[in-house]
Length: 130
Picture (cartoon, rainbow, N blue to C red):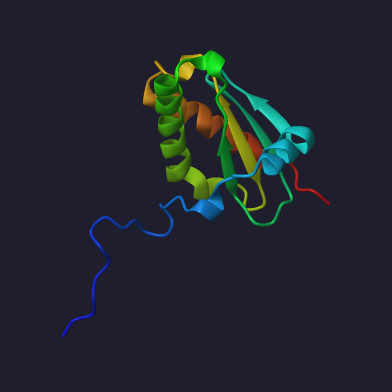
């Protein structure tokens, strides 16, 4: 008898996006906003806090001014998927909160990916905390 294989819809551990990889509490978001460093680009702002030790962890916030819930959820899903695919490249001790702009809704996925790559590049150049 052969060993059971993984379910057909399961992802390799490096590509999943488990709950422990997300910022969920308002206090965690507030800590990143208050103590973190801000990175901006045309499609989103990102606040990153280094030195947390249990990361990388990610959060997404979109104000109502961006659009109705359908629009906000679509933007969030697109950005979350790109982050999920590249989360292993973020520093292991970082918490990052993304604030997408309205332009992210209509932007091609490649442009969103390019801005995310620039953010990852900037994070890798930031000096480590003492």
